[in-house]
Image (cartoon, rainbow, N blue to C red; front, side):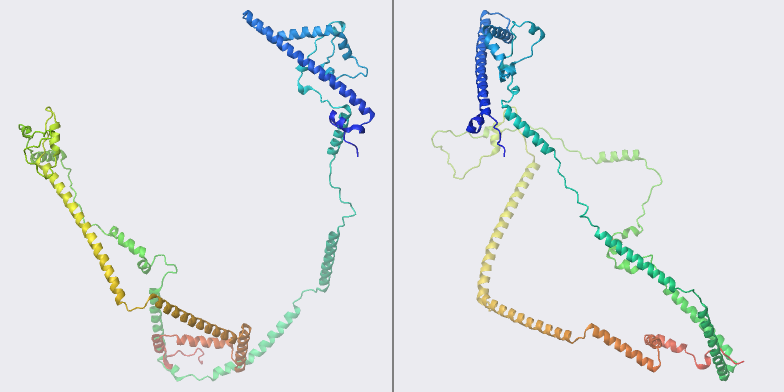
Length: 566
């Protein structure tokens, strides 16, 4: 595994004896170059500091002279720098020449950055000093990284290898051809071919066994059966004819009144048919009832409420207002109304002004604040000072006194009286409520004490025990009944035959029924018809039975048979 190259000059010092001789020489040379670059940077920093001091001194001198114009420090600085650089180049030409030429043809880092290509005019005048920019004016971002060339080459080589590795594209390799075997497709194809071969084989077999379609044999059989049926029918017709000839005609048929009876029977039948049609027409109804029945309307609560509330709309109004044919004279009526109101107007009496009667002279004088006891006897009852007296004394001589009418005085007295009565009633109601509450409490206490003394019932503890015992007995009884019902249910289920046994028994019964009918020479349809007729006869009402008995006529009223002897 290759050793990783160092990235800084300090790493070379740590490697020690592992570095070969060529690397040691390169390291010493690089250290010397760095030392020279550091010294040059220190000189440039000192020169910059000195230039700043000179520019400040020049600026202070211009301000002290009182000149109004301001000298641009940048211009002075550039001129000063150019002159300073020219002096330095003239003073030390050997040092500049020694920097520009090296034995191995290599330049230092600072010389590479400060070096510029010479112009044509500068090449002709070799003695002129070309100003170069200071190292401090260049930006730090433009400096090249101070990495050894070996380290740079190693890093460049490694970067290229990384780029080549990153440019590689990885993808899955295709499946080899010998791995894929379409076994399923082969199996499905073989099955499809076998199925088609079987279908073709069966079709050929059916076509080979097919015969032409003919009705000859069937027609021959039908013809023979028809001939045999005709031969068998001839003797039956002969026997029937002989039987018809042998039938005896009743004597009632030869009666001359038979025709009249037949006519009467036809009339009765027609009348009965008409009456039946009228009854059916009365009781008939449409298949779809378009109008609601009266019963549904009566039973509906909403319809009843609606008829009760809105029934007045259907009633015809009994009041018929009388309308005037002519238009009245409203102006004349208005004038008459004004005259009537002016005549009936009440004339109120005008208030008459009377002279004032001031009673200020009757006001008693105020008592003095001296501690002398007054001669007049002082009553012990506290007298309330009237509010009207203070109002009268506060009035000035210019204001007019106000008078209270008798109506206002009576009104105020009535209001005061009503308020006093209301307060009295409230006090009485409060006292009554208080007394009632006290009496009810005392009565409740007496009732409870007497009820406890006279109560023949037991205590709650004993009642609880009895109730608990009763509930337990009821639960046990209910449990016994439940178990008994379960046992009965189980016995019924165990004794009941299975469904298939029931079906088998039903089939056996039906089989025996058919067998007995067959032995008796009867048919199921015949028995069914007879049963339906018997059921219909039993379902007739007594009236229908009576009508049926009436409709039955005697034998001499019945119609004669159709086959009459000629």
